[in-house]
Image 1 (cartoon, rainbow, N blue to C red):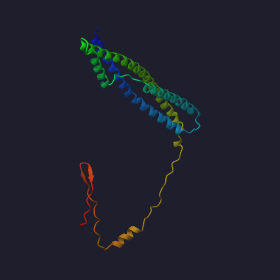
Image 2 (image 1 turned 90 degrees about the vertical axis):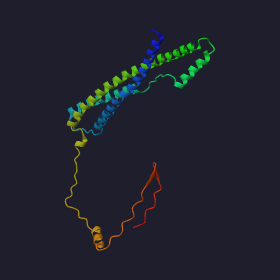
Image 3 (image 1 turned 180 degrees about the vertical axis):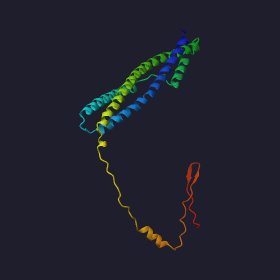
Length: 236
């Protein structure tokens, strides 16, 4: 395989691993949402648990609740390992790369075939970094993929066990909210309000109503900036 073909191959591999890094980060959003939901369900059952004396259902509930808790705990552990603690390698910045190219030009400008030498060493520089960076990034992405797979596996198990544990929790009357009586307030007689309103209306009957109060001043805005409002008109 020619050097130009190898260069093209390593370049594609480099950008492929960078794209995989972004895809893996995006794939973590769904497991995170499911984790939060299942943890909310487990917290709800724990907060509202009250022993009703149903021994058989209590045992079933405790077994599946514990299995769900363990599954979610393992899912959280693998989620963290698939998200945090990885160092990716990238090419130097465009300015640093251009500075290196200018340095190559200055180094070989007095030698015969300087343009070929600059091109050769600059290509070697890019190819070497493509190989080194893509190799590091490939290992990181492979590790993250494994941990993400384990995350999904344990989340599914934890969510399944949580759903199963909710069945005895509900039908075994372990929810203390179902045991609390609801108190209602009933108004037996209507409330009659008398006084100031009727008396004031009666007092003002036959009098000429006063002029309405002045309206608020208008707002003047020029290009998004509010100018001081003009004083209200005193004309009646």
